Length: 176
Length: 245
Image 1 (cartoon, each protein chain N blue to C red):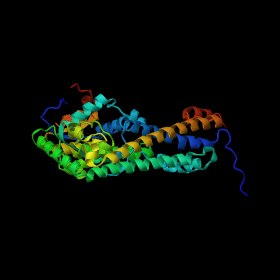
Image 2: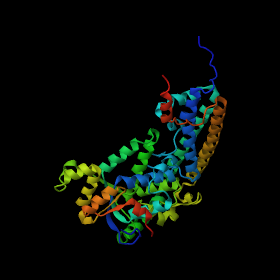
Image 3: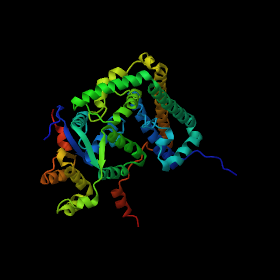
Image 4: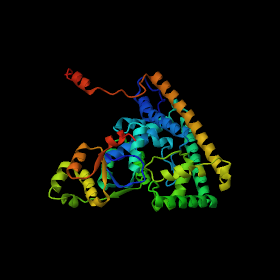
């Protein structure tokens, strides 16, 4: 388990899945902007301590990136919320990306399918979002990336594929 | 010939629509405005020059419910609310203009820009040797405006993972000043104007919220309707339907 403590030894690259972004965006929308109705959507970041641990963990990486498929998945989430609040949620997502200088990369379907001999099987089993994130981890392998997710199945798949991954649950429970 | 307009009957669907589609969203959103304003946070953004989470009253009503909003403000039973909503929106316009004036004033102040440049250079030199000082090229251009935004919104601390967090932690004391100190940037007046507009808007929203809550109570009591829709238990009603032949 990587440490969240702020040492001068920063790690290079964090790849973010949809779940952690959604939790961070939702928590800030609730706490800072008073969107109380979203509080029930919070699964792992429920208080300022766990938000702070997650924030420090993300800050311990020099670069943050995600895939365009994750943005599409965020859109799917926002479309399911109350229409009158959707623009405000998009503003939160936009600001979160801007403030953390999040990069966004496209992993094409044809590239996903060619991820080794099992590419299409993996795509069928996990779906394009998870496979795009694993694709990014392979693409940036020299930076020793870590994938942050809320998906247990993706964590297991990453372990099999020797991609470093952490579950947000473990990050929010870390004791400094 | 136009018939006399009758008062709504008991359990009126029309009054229900006012309560559920107009008063309830307004009460919820004004509560959020006051929550933000009490912390001094206007949610003002330099890129849009607007308060992102404080809106004109009609914007708080879903598009499909706007006809109910129009009906609400047109009906004599709800007399005075049109003017109150207009007053709220005028206070918001004043607030956004005051925020823009203060921010623009800082951007025109050579002293402010020089202090920003010096601070950023110092920060950059730290960033070169200490990885805990995140830095990217876009900060050089965007940071003065971001700092003006922090000052407008009275931001104390930023989350650790924000690129500007470390800069603001280190240099906030240099820029987060009193009205008297903003004189050096020629912005004492615009700073005071912003503080007054913030207080005026909060007062207006406080009063409007109180009036809306009182009016909701009055309508609910007079027309004997619940203050929020009661969810129908479909499984029960389906069973009941089974007995209707």
